[in-house]
Length: 226
Image (cartoon, rainbow, N blue to C red; front, side, top):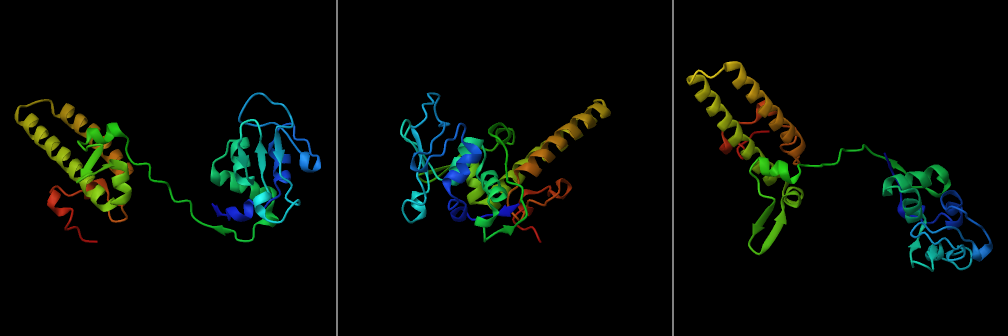
């Protein structure tokens, strides 16, 4: 993935970008116009593009719709008209106007932490809202602000469930319940816990922890050696 400078992207002449993305674009000096993507009453002339050559400074390099009041600079223009996210819009501009970019770097696209949804946290017995004094914090925000503490909480709950399942398995075998059925049910739960573990861990300290490495005792979490 490329790292691109948004200031350089927004220095690209707005009319040059408009030619690529605005439907029914008509160029006419300071009266250039086209369709606005924010509403359906497409009366040409209400969308105007500020000529970047009229005055000095990038602040005059924009498009404005007098009907809805929306203003676009080059990056936002591509995002709204093409339906792109920020990174895709930047790369679109780089592909079409490479000479405007002087500070280009490549970096690894690290997978974004998606975490667990509310139902999955509830399955583990983790509250969605956590209260610290007068402050209430969402569990996902808690994960981002306190990743290690979040992971210890997550692992603690998984250890609790594993411990309960082991006890149920022992009880079932003692009562001569069908062994294959107990094993299949246990494997099903273990598979679900493994999935929650892989997607839920966020801290650099714990996120590479394998399911079989999860300790059986919660007290071992904070004493874990690296």
